[in-house]
Image (cartoon, rainbow, N blue to C red; front, top):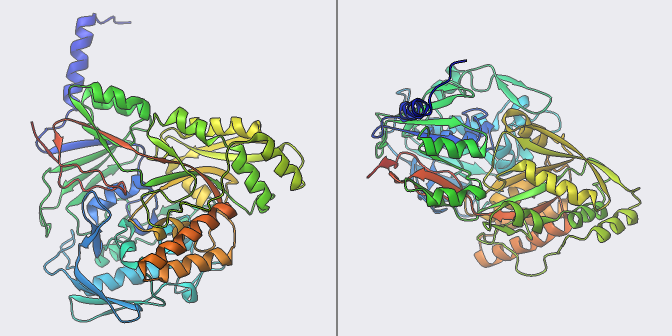
Length: 546
């Protein structure tokens, strides 16, 4: 074995680090927690997929940088018809897709009709999650899926090349906000057809495996960056769109590099292999802050982490058993132990920043093993109750920096409260999300970062309609959330959502446990990155300073 003297080893390490650094003026390497699932907005729901999609595609409306304020994007203005059953958009002119084809009203309708007419395999919650939760129905539903009578979307009409009208089946006060979702970015109709965007299969876990190449090699939008290459497990490379209609990207190239381990991402920043990363482990924040070359950027607490419950698994269809679970989870210890002072114990699903957050009447479930056991016995359950508890591996989330630690801590408190826990785990990409969203996990860790500043994006998305992930049917809650979404009086709307917040915590489709303030780390000379409450930031404004 060759022994390298310490000095030579240090020189080799410095050389390797320098070689890993990109040309500072043109390229930024950003460390991610995992690979995307696929680069096709309507077919994903996770932040790791949406981050690069957000650079490639644009919707009719967008969000002002660093806020949840709706601003024009591919539409310059919009107006609701009296009664709110249709919205007319004036489109930006002179915009080209990255394949050179023209963006126009027909392209907008093509995309909406694509989503509405998804084939059966793409209609599941595990695949087209956002269409299901925002629009709620398909033109030709597969068995068991909602049809046109459940859909918010009714149709799309063009008037010339620059005016389009979206027809709705009912008024929706959150409709414009929902269009800011990255999932509803407008894609090139020519590319969708040429590269067979909807072709593929969905496996038993609800994971879409495309046979076409649109979402893996040719995602074509109108955004400031476009895909150059993607090698799963290594890197995803975006290059600046030279014909972008707006302000051109300041950097020529963005590289997203998957590094699943928290400590490895920190080390990659310290060696210069990457220039920034998301989902900083709370325990590492002090280390970054003490560095002379690195810095921390903070996001607002605009998220929630929860223990999900699928009521199709008996006896969790019994509310007493769900209450027992809530009392059995030591949420305070998890937040205190793993969030380094950057987490607030959640007493409801909505974060305090969101309209509809209830300040009174919310049921409380403090950790109480004795109470949990009593409720299980009252429900007629023999102790201990065996449960399967799922958590994701190879990933960190803004609301859950270390899923395994959270799961193990909750497992201990459950074992102390009349439950017997069997753990199951799966990689975030692609298996975990598919397993959970297709209804195959009994108990599981998951969370949500708001996509826009509206309670419908939290409550209606999760609890506004039957959902395989939670496995329940509660018409009373569904109707309340539908009324809240249709209410145009802001004070009445807030009151309805407060009532819904209380009802969710009474019914307990899940147990929320934390609202966290995520952190990002960058080299100090990286400027122009403004953290967003919804965890989706444009990289086109990023540049290097001194």
